[in-house]
Length: 355
Image 1 (cartoon, one colour):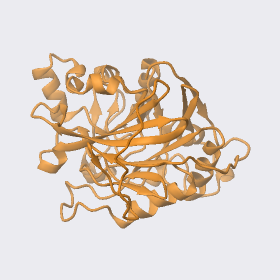
Image 2 (tube, rainbow, N blue to C red):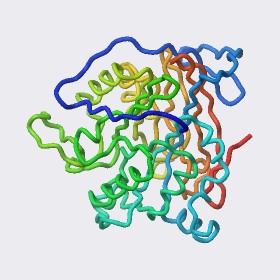
Image 3 (tube, helix red, strand yellow):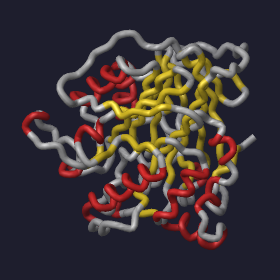
């Protein structure tokens, strides 16, 4: 991101702010071809020419820089994590705001949880140097609302947050308090205000959620990740609506393809919570966790990317090595164009754009 102002909207202080109207979202484009909306309509082929006042948003999927990825960086990249993003860095850097789901805490702190405490018994922790990979790719904001943020407990999460702050990278969907975890991050670029919120529905025990499923005033704020509780998410989206022109909601949900490869279709859970967010006021819903790409749809002039798949990951199944970058062009505070950019993860765990 080049020249933007950022502030954190603490939405749960005294009261919620409610707002009304949303943005008009005209069409979606898949690559160079016309897209199709969920009402059966066809994408208009005549896209308006780009403007210097356009705001370009790019969204990437799951980024995990531990395990075999770490080994590849050491063996093939000389220990420099910019190696991972070398083939997409210029594209990512050209965005005004670039987003990814950070699937591994970047830390050398904390102790690994027992196998019984983590989903599927898998813990990820990337070395502190991995922050340079995000910087080299021009990534401006990451979601931490996922099942691996607390793999190395609160100490690991806290250290990761501090490292992101020091690097100038925003985080969303986790925090050291309830307010921090659920707060929207709002960027102002070329007089356009864009709010990011993030939530998870995967693999976070009750004690690790920033808010347990009890009345807010009955608990002290706590560290953790932002779980998708509608009673907190819905007011948060509406409050962000009053402060931003465009609302992006990231959701970690669905079925991990490595666990169940019987279908690649979005689950009923994905449908339910994505449409809840859209109907509440989100303009774009970005999904991840399935580790495979799933459709990008138009819903009443709003956009739903069920899953962007992997961006940097070491999974071996063919579909898990095929990801997507979603490019959104905002013009006059409205979405003018949405383009799917296919990527392929090579043998070194580098994503490459596919022509």
